[in-house]
Amino acid sequence: MAAKESPFLSVMGVFNYIGLMSPVIITFLVFFSGALGALMWATFLILTLAIAALINERFIKSTDIEPNKLLKNMSYNCGVFKIPGDSIQSIIPFRITFHFFTIIYLITSAAAAGSLNTSSIVFIVFISMLSIGDLIRIKSSKCYDIETIMRGLVYGLVSGLLGLASF
Image 1 (cartoon, rainbow, N blue to C red):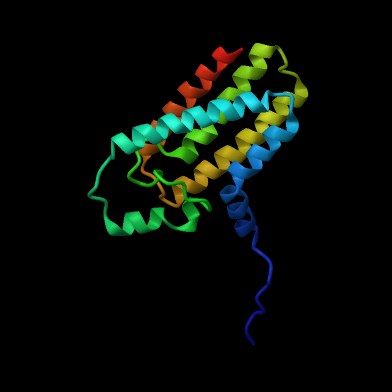
Image 2: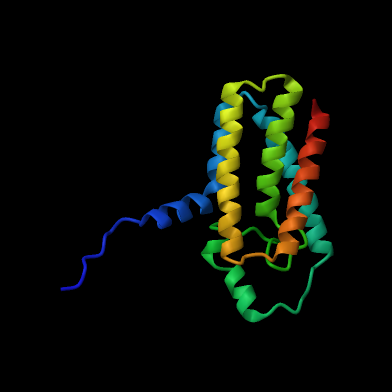
């Protein structure tokens, strides 16, 4: 007798789903926290991603991508929402930029405002855990190569630090 399949997700399926939805979850958490300047975060995030889109449109990393790598990047494992201009051919990947921008912006804005207390640290650690989990999932799904991930990391970190100038 064959084992009965469960209609529910496995534990790894739940973690994968949380990783896939992490940008949406993080956005809601930042807006509902209210204490960390959600409107400023959203404004600088939009500017950061708009500049990344211009860079991606102007400079395509390579037009000679292996078809299986391109198909893997287009799978749901690399993101639920497909954003035009963000693919394996992008110079700066949006999803990776989003995570690093958010972590650095939250840390620097809380530090600049002098509000690094226990609740804000717990909030930032939780957001960081969601982001790091998604980044591990993206890397293990081979959505981007390490060079592209590092470009997204550097661009997100620099953009997050530039957001500090808003204070």
